[in-house]
Image (tube, rainbow, N blue to C red; front, side, top):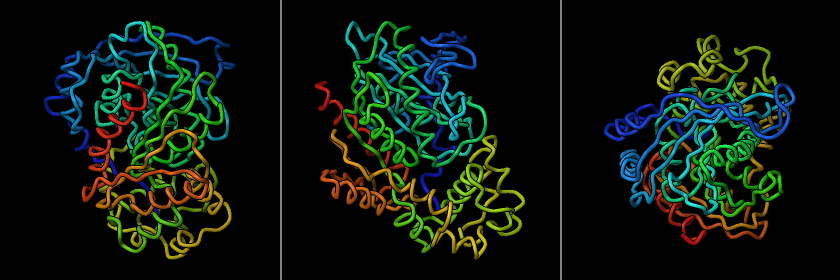
Length: 412
């Protein structure tokens, strides 16, 4: 089964841009606390700590973003980048912490800022999260902040410096971690002498596509006081696992090694939430039944995980479990139904869907299925196709267009 982009660490190499960012890193940690009870009774969104990560002038921000591969115009402003650790909840609703990035224009003046929330794609290694590595996901936040937005980029649970393991494609916890970062961001904004005006433009890539749709639905429902959904622009997301993504993975339309990576991540992650098998041998063939669970502990790099997995879903999974992927039942079916529901609502804000017909990680049929579900609710969601490029290329091609669209919607 699958989902998403396998983020190979080579895509995180920054060359000259990395040098610029490293020169700009600010040492030290500052701690701030939001209003509300502290210690064990702290409210969701309460800030635990704020760590400055980088201070870039406009030229450095431009070199960084363009050096990653985003063909955007020059950044208009310098950018201050902070890591925020904040209080949120587990999938079971218990207190925990998560981390993420808040990036702000260096000189916002007295104006309140519209906010862009960016939800990232698949990663097995906690150290690849936006608040830890200066890769493409942090660059997306810097791109929007340098353009004059407040930008937030959650790491999700179990990634970055948060505890535990990542509940992969658990849309509920991706949503709570994302909206709680919006609340925490207000503290960071106040420290920098600015604030948010309540408008939130939501975008996300790959795994972050469904997360963005779910965050948008939460905002429209009023789940975050003081914020309102202003636009949605998800990119290349696996919105339709059972109808589009799994069939494409099983019939060879997707890259076999990537499909095995995503499937293993998903099955291990979901089994931690709701036991799907009594033994790994029920799901994974030998020798993978003895190794797969430990690979997704957050401490193995994507390269290490990929090297320890086979080249196809058929080599990874037992025949019985392959049948469960084709025709899920019981708790497995209910989990798929929840994951596949992210486009079954009617956004009142403008929405555009982005993908690439050359994508062999996330089948483009996912985007068409999302578009059709939105249309059935009376919502027109144009699809902007980046063409023959691959999965990561769909993000590099789409984000300059999304930035321009967000500018037009906010009068920039």
